[in-house]
Amino acid sequence: MTDAFDDLLDANTGWQEGFALADLTGRPTKHLAVVACMDTRIDPLGALGLAPGDAKIIRNAGARITDDVIRSIAIVVANLGVDRVAVIVHTDCAMSKLSAEVLRERVAAVAGDVGDWDPLAVDDQAAALRADLDRLRQSPLLPGDLVLGGFVYDVTTGALRPID
Ligand SMILES: [Zn+2]
Image (tube, rainbow, N blue to C red):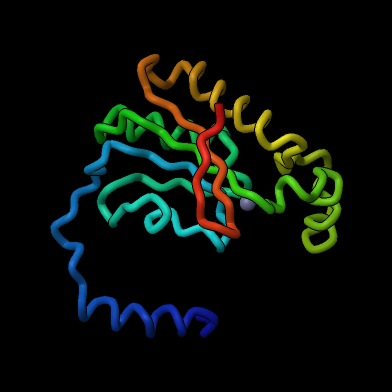
């Protein structure tokens, strides 16, 4: 096996020594699921005052509501007591700065032909966030009383702003 992950395995050895999360369950204590962009500048737990065990965190490029995000939310709502979902996009997001065409070209440059693959780039961030919240609101897999919130996180100040 490759040694590309040795740094992680070494770090995990230390993690095990002080391991203190054994008593947590998979049930989020704040009844919360968060969908956030995978951007490395965002610390969802820190930014929201959360600790491990408090929330289900789902991350992808652009915090887009995809079929798989809906799959995950449907499962935690039905099984683990989640009754609210916060969708968090952010300033300076590559998914808003790069067009679908550019993203397709860049992936094709390293992976080969990607056909008409849709990277889910975002032209208008607020409009895309509202459309994604609508997708959740209208999903047949989710209950009508699921509480939904959309937010923009500022990567320069750490501020979280709700969208209207
Ligand atoms: Zn992003």
